[in-house]
Image (tube, rainbow, N blue to C red):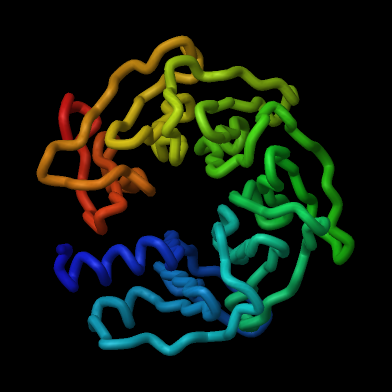
Amino acid sequence: MPSRAAFRTRFRVEYWHVISRERERVWTRQGWFDNCSKMLATTTTDTLTIADLVAIKKAPSSIPTCLSLPSAPVASSWSPDNIFLFIASASTIHKFDPSSNTLCDIYAAPKQKSIYSLVSKDKNTVVFALDHDIHVLDCSTSLSEITHTFNSHKGPVTSLSLSNDNTLLASASAGFVYVHNLALGSHIPLRGVGADVSKVLFHLHSRTRLLVSVARQILVYDTTRPSVPLKTISLSDSAPGDIISFASSPFSKTLIAIVTSAGIVAMIDLEKEKA
């Protein structure tokens, strides 16, 4: 039977979406607005919490929530300039403005369809998966508009990731991973990914390096050579469970953090054959 600590960790992994980003100090008409140097956004099933680096370093027992969410989130993403936080539920995409602590709706899904994943290309552009279709949403005005649609997948698209220059988009569904060129509107499939794909992630330091999690393995691809992964890294027995999420380090070109379904958080060195 799992320990209580492991159970609590699994609960957070399953129900919380946590995002942190570097933020720059910017000048506004009201004076210096320090976009919190580092900010952590945490969503539960019905609340949003924003915390800055100073508060986190003090290791508080709790952090006050900043607002209630109308429905449980399925994905969230900071805009690259860290001005807005986009939050998606199964039916609606919201835009949160930390400077005014306001949440507004920018897209409502048609009935009988569900939003599965979301990434932000810039502060006015969101890419999201609606069932098996991938849409590019322009939200620069009050009337958001879908400007492009990719329909290469046959099943629900469960994971999206943009390259570090926002020109390539990776998408994953059961057994399939595609890499889309946003400028050309074209796409290529990755070969040899297997049926248990859970997440895709473009490496923070390399435009064409794509990481794919499949059960207990990380497949490392160069998208210019999509026929076979460059490397396959397997989890060691000390980390039970399948990989359900991961992130690359902003400070290291080889380290990534992974989370497993058993509530384990671990570091992986991409230069090694086994994690």
